[in-house]
Image 1 (cartoon, rainbow, N blue to C red):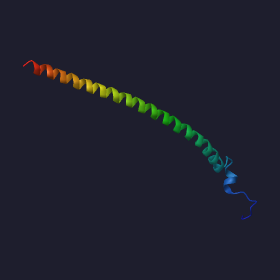
Image 2: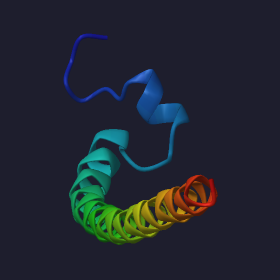
Image 3: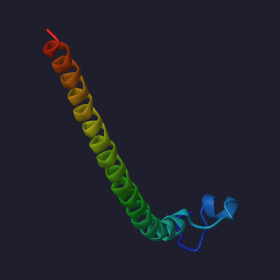
Image 4: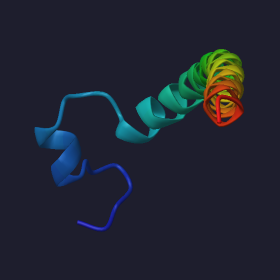
Length: 81
């Protein structure tokens, strides 16, 4: 039972590929997949920042114009007296 020529129980019943070998192959493939994923996420974040910046500028311009409108209305009302 202790000789190196005997096959183990797993070798007798499991005829599939060695999981350690598959893990090492998938690990090298996942590294390139991870790099591609990080690149896409980075590109998406860049686009999101641009959209958010543009949106913030529009909100700021709208707020400023709104305050100017209120100020003009108030000044017209107070000048009539």
